Image (cartoon, rainbow, N blue to C red):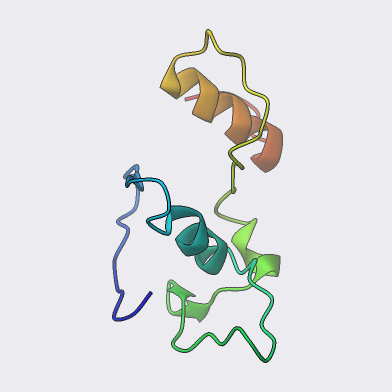
Length: 96
């Protein structure tokens, strides 16, 4: 990924779509601070949330990463699946 930037507004849902191999998972791994750097992998730039540097420690206070292999009931609507996953991770008391 080179020259990437973006903004997510409060209260909005974002979707990352693209062909297989386009880098969707790589982008999500960078955004959620799940990339371990070494001599072969270098990350430059910054990811901030409300002007604070993003870390795995603070990512969980406002977001959740639902992996592709999470088991979500196939008969859920998209809204139900996302609500279910969010409630498990964010300990919400009631669904919106």
